[in-house]
Every structure is written in structure tokens, then in C-alpha cells.
Length: 240
Image (cartoon, rainbow, N blue to C red; front, top):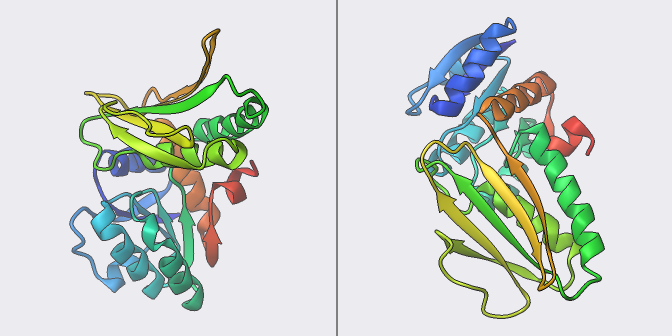
């Protein structure tokens, strides 16, 4: 498989290392958007881990070049409907995920089931904490947002999530779900769902030990997307 890497930061380098180790080829590495349609067309698939400001441009460039693209960049999802329409109307291929880790996707499944059970017990107050490295551009993380949305889908006593950066602040009413972000050196990613009562606390935690899980998942998504058109996500890949 020939891969174009759009975004060559820590994740791009981790993906390259795994891709080369299993016999794939990287035909394009771009960290600043300076590539041409001809450069893209050398690839069977593109993997996009850039910035929120450049992700949509990269996606549309891939669609125009008829190269399916796997996107790990987050904080652009306010444009998802427009981008999805562009992909489908131009016969492109798009795979999106706020987190490519198999473990995180199972963590979301567990969170959904736990939220469904605990919704019946008024004494439990849910909250979400996320910790990432200090270079992470968006807060809360895309993973934390998906975790919050997963919980809210099953927890009728809450109707919106509210972000508190560096853990500062509190919810203003009982319908809000607190999502707290923390930034620390050399932390690949930790996400914790907590159900707290006066009597006890139930916690569900996913802790990434390295970027390998994210990179491996992105590569699996790329293999899945070769010669595909349409819009896909981790549910299509993992069936969870």
C-alpha cells in the first residue's frame, strides 16, 4: 500500500514507522501543505493528522485527487456535514475518527453500557477528565467530546457537556456534564469517566502508554479504505 502522510508530526512519524515495518510505502510526507495533486495521486490512500485549520483543505484535496483519506485531526467537526456532502457528491472516500485506538473504542462501548445502568440511580453524578501532552492543540480532546456524547446518549439526567480547562470551574446546574481537561508533559492520553456518590465512586479509565495504539488503528483504517468511496468511521471497521 502506498501512503501519503498529510501531517508529519509525532503521529505521522509513528504511523510511518509501523507502516514501513509491515511492508507499506510512504510516497508523500507533507507537514506544511506544500504538495500537488500529482503528489497525492501517487498514493493509494492518505492519512491526515495535521491541524484543525488545515484538515478540511487536505480532505478536499484528497477528494479532488480521488485518493481516499483517513482523518485523525479533530476540532473541525463543526464542518463535518459540509465536508461529508463534498466527499459523497464527488465520489470521494473519507474515514474519520476522534480516536483510532481499539481500546478507546471499547472504552466508549463500556461507557455507554455503564451510563445506561447508572442513569437509574439519582445519587450518582457523572463527570469526565482527560489528560494529554502539553503540545495538544485542542481542549477538550476529540476523544473526550466523543466520550461525553456517548454518556449523554444514555444518561437522561444530563443534556449537555461543559468544558473546564485545567479543571477550573464547576457545573452551573444539574443538567450539565462536567468535562475537565488537563495538560501535562509526555502524556499520550488518559480519559476517565467517573460516577460519584456520597457512598462510593465508580470509575472507567483508559490510559494510553504510547501512540502506537492510535497509529496502528489509523493504519488499519487506511488498509480498509483502499479503493473505497463513501464516508466511514470506526464502527464500520471494528463493528462495535
